[in-house]
Image 1 (tube, rainbow, N blue to C red):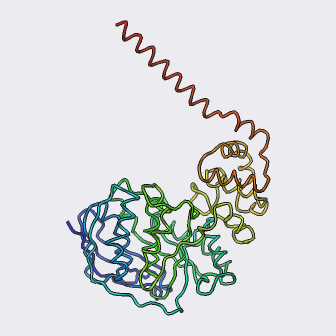
Image 2 (image 1 turned 120 degrees about the vertical axis):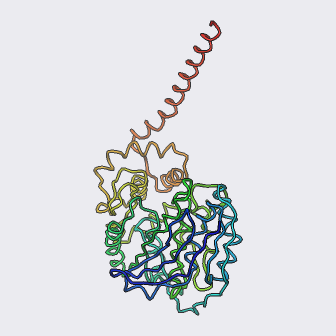
Image 3 (image 1 turned 45 degrees about the vertical axis):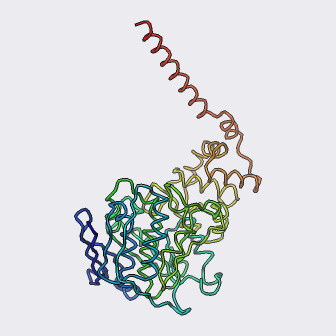
Length: 399
């Protein structure tokens, strides 16, 4: 059964400009919408490009073709029926090749006068992009004009009130940097519930890029903050789509707007160094994966990783307003020990940083790391299992 998608239409609702399209398929919601505050309506394109890109993964999960009864960017339509699906199938083999049908139409390019935007979440990656591409520092044509904040599934709770609360928090930080923050609220995440195998980390580049296409009316470049350095780039089965960003993002744009990965020349430690002099980041850095209100718990994996990095490079004292150092100190020894013997990418980056910055781990952490307690516990469990199986086999032979 084909997924039929109508033309995007605009309407006003309680101070919001709503851009929505009807979707016909029994297993999908009846309407896909994007909405922003009324004062930003003129920045939004009514073209169906955003809808086409937003629906490609749900369609591939269902194994159903998409038929849009309107035009789609000629460049994007070609890529949707070719390389985009090739990359998505490599990432998630449970998807199926489909056809996207629409009337191809080139979008008018911006002749050097288009705006430049980036998504802003107040994390290390986005603060690094903001710092690198601030108009005072950026190369010509790459200086940021405004920031965006998308509600497309990154938060566990995504009702309107909580989205606005998070937006107001981020808006203050953006304002301190001299930027407008444009919110985009959407029900896109509802379409991804068609398969239990789909999660946000495996699809965020497509979701956020679809939202970025809404801005092509006046925006020529959308800078997408990379999560990984270029050395981590590959196209293949993975739980994190960000590994493909340097390959995938450039083919998600149209003739009017480029979607470009930025920051891949730096690893997480180098990005943390880069934001050390950013006053807004010192107070408002938000890396927590457990607290959705813009506050850091100072004990989760991402908080501890960031805090240890700040300690290693010698800037921890500058971020006392963003984190609770008393909580950090309770987990510090354990986390340093785990990082010292860890094998994950971030562990290795921090281990290299320890050498580079001549950071000496506390004695307790070094002892805990050398004890290799988790490995010993694992071996003890294996020996106990072997012992039980041996006893059972012996009793079985007697019987």
